[in-house]
Length: 243
Ligand code: FES
Image (cartoon, rainbow, N blue to C red; front, side, top):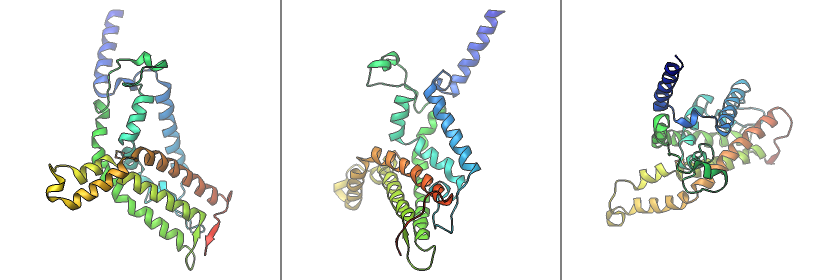
């Protein structure tokens, strides 16, 4: 009887691991705290929304153009190579190049990226088109922050939106999928693709700093969100820098 139960359990586990990577089925406090934080963040964003505020002229970047796009933006970030490196190493314990300390315990652990549910990582190149498509909305938000009252106004919040948009733009255009779009499917650039060659070389400069842009832009996104929430709540003023 107990043998049958064990067999059934093993069968269920096997069929689940065909779809769900085994990292999701084992005790892993890093993974579950990560998931808990995401669920909590999404819940708070849905319960306490901050859209465009006509008194400060600021639009929270998480709600631009609408909260409904957040899952696609999140998938673009989740499948980004910069974050993948970090979460595979630090959350899923795939330390293929490092075997010191506690990581030695995970020596020889099978890499499960781009398999089962994580096949979604392969769709990064498609999420990239979406990320490019929503960029103009951030520029429009900057414009709104400058014309929310008669005449031209630059506020501290507006300045933060400019920095945030610049970082998101650098992050998006330094993407490896953009690199492929610009430079893929060509055997020889210098032969007859001079313009593409120049764009590719320019993108190479950005691409070299992709990881830095990834973390800076993510951090900035949260800081701007907190700043706007604080100004809307009246906790800190949206100082006018130029008018
Ligand atoms: Fe990071 Fe594309 S690889 S955004």
